[in-house]
Length: 90
Image 1 (tube, rainbow, N blue to C red):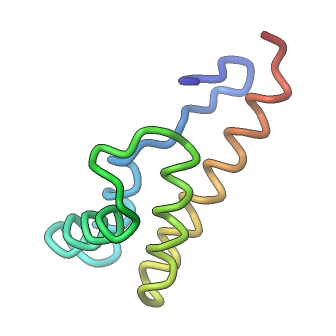
Image 2: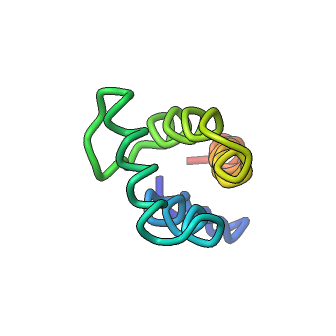
């Protein structure tokens, strides 16, 4: 799954998540927070699968108020992408 042309919606990426965190907590904290969340879940970077990205986003949401905003945003984008992908005929 990459881009859903009919809706102009791209699959969120790990870099999108780190960029969103960077806007809230700065680049070093964002990289560290994302890496620790990935490691805590027993995963390896880069995280590419939507389900795995969602798991990391949910983990990040538990860390603090600012990270909750970025994590929830990523989770919503992934859920939206998956719902749109299911609605487009193959």
